[in-house]
Length: 299
Image (cartoon, rainbow, N blue to C red; front, side, top):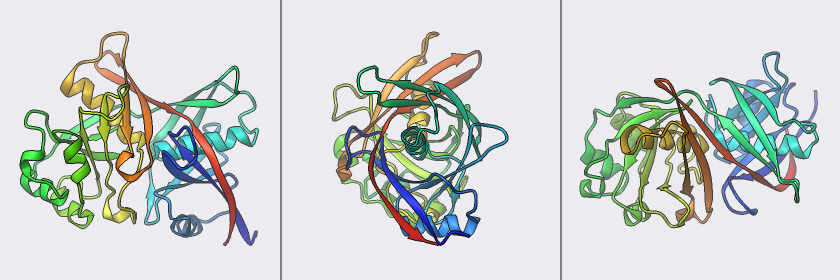
C-alpha cells in the first residue's frame, strides 16, 4: 500500500489562479478506502476533494468528499477532475465521455480552443426537481444575517435539485448579498423538509454585464465548510429555476451566466443551458479550470 498520495489543486470556473472555486483532485484513487478519502478531504480543506477511479459503466468514476462527508455530485469538482485528466493525457483527444457518480452516469462534452488548446467542459445534470419551502421567511432571513424585507417579494423560496438539493433564496439585490452573515448551524432546524440541504441565495442584479444572475452558496453544517465560492450544481438549479419561475425557456433552449464568488474575492462564472425536452428539462453547465499546484500527503 502506498504511503502518500498526490493532490492536485485546480481552480474551477476561473480564468486565472486564485479565482473561481478551488478543488482538490486525486487522479489515482483505486487503492484508497472510504475513510482515507474522507480524511484526505478534511486535510486538504477545500469545499470538495474529488477522487478518480475506474468504472465499468462509464469512462471514469468520480467520488466527491467535503471535509465532513461524501457528496453525490459536485459541479466544480467535476470540472477540476476533467481538467486534471486532460492535462494528464487521459482524455486522449476525446470530445465526449461519461462519468459515473452517485447521482448517476452523466454525459460530458469537451471543446478545445484551436489556438491555445485549452479545454472547456459541458456537464449534463440530472433532471431538475423542485419542492416547496414550508418554513419561516423571517427566520430564514435572520439565519442569513438579513431582514425579511431583504427577501424578494415576488419570487418563491423553493428547494431545487439537479443532483444535489439546495434551497433557492431570491433576495432583492447585490446589497443584500453583500450583507449576508450566515449562521450555518441553524440551517437544519429551518430546513425541516430537507435538513441536510445547502442554501443558495441569489438576485437578478449582477456585477458583470454578461451575467443574468448573482449568487452565493452557504454549505450545510454537516459538510464542514461555510461558503462555496462558485457552485456548479446549484448554478444548474438556478437555470432551471429561471425557466420554471421567471421566464420559460424557448424551444431552442435558454442560455445564461451565473456569477458568484465576488464577496469572497474569488470571481467566477458558470454558463448554464436549459433545453425543453417535452415536459422535462435538460440542464447543462459548462466551464474550465486552471492548475494551481501539486503536493503530496501521507496516508
